[in-house]
Image 1 (cartoon, protein in one colour):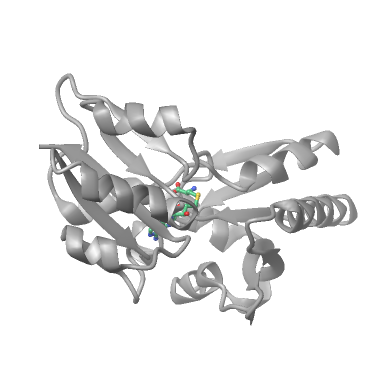
Image 2: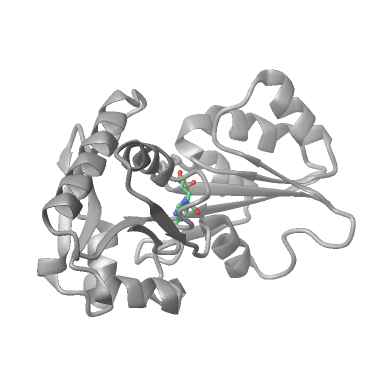
Amino acid sequence: MIHFVSLGPGDPELITLKALRTLREADYIYTPVPVSRKGRHASKAAEMMLSLGIREEQIQLYDLPMSKDRDGALEAYEIVAREACEKQKAEPNARIAIVAEGDCGFYSSSAYIGEHIEQEGFTTEQICGVPAFIACNGRLGGQLVQLEEQCTVIPGEATREEWDRAWQSRHTIVVMKGSLCEAEIKSAVAQHSDRKWHYFEFVGMPKEYITSSTDEILQREFPYFSIIISKRR
Ligand code: SAH
């Protein structure tokens, strides 16, 4: 049994007790280190686990290429899945965890890793967590949706028709992966004054940035770790 452990959005206090217990009991915790053209970045996941008392020797870092071209990341997921399976074959009693940001069942890398692991004949268990968009709304206060309202989540990319339908609808719109759709969001912010716009970056982390000012949103360069929430006025 290999556990997918949700870390929550970044604030160490937003991990669940079950996830923390599973990490404490794990012998090997596979943890991504983002690698971009600028080089290897600090692993936010590893920093957070260390702050919760997880020991360095439990953490097994793996490189995760960050680029629009998904091939590097897909290869990294296959490699980490293979490593976890080999470890489990070599040490059948070892407790293995693979971490994911936010919730591991919501637009998560765990999907790809899990497919490979299951192909190898191992079972997996998911430990759910707080997804980033829920943490964003928590910072804002109030209801993301209430009563008969509906919510649409767009993962950074959508067709022209889907974007138009979203902005014209009465739905609350949550957009993930802001860097993939910065131009679309800015044009919608400029055109749809019938909507409220809220922008979130690195929520729950030291460099958190949140604004509900359309001017500030229009000036901002959106990193990948950004979320936009738009509600009808
Ligand atoms: N499984 C994650 C989503 C992974 S997809 C979850 O449950 O939230 C990756 C996207 O999540 C990023 O592009 C960004 O839009 C969002 N995200 C994750 N953590 C975030 C954070 N701390 N602050 C802002 N956005 C975050």
